[in-house]
Image (cartoon, rainbow, N blue to C red; front, side, top):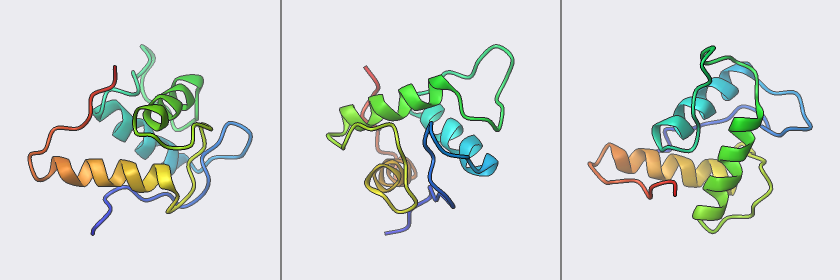
Amino acid sequence: MYNPFQLTSTLASNASANEDDTVAAKQAFGQLGYYQTPSYGLTPYPDQGLFDGIKKFQKDNDLTVDGVMQPDGETATALGGILSGLGENKTPKPAA
């Protein structure tokens, strides 16, 4: 299955982040209701809102809740699966 969400490096609060990965993650989680863009706009820098959204997504989808996304890891794969389903007019599991 095609995964529309790909990371090039690990996205974690204790590691340097690829700016393109950060923006892609913020946009993807925002589309699903797990990230709210701050009033100052979308930046290429990780923020607490992003990591909170990752953890909430992980919890809601029965994944390991650690706030970390690895290339081809369970969180990135699950996110890609949900995003690919949107292209098939499927409704994502809403963020509560």
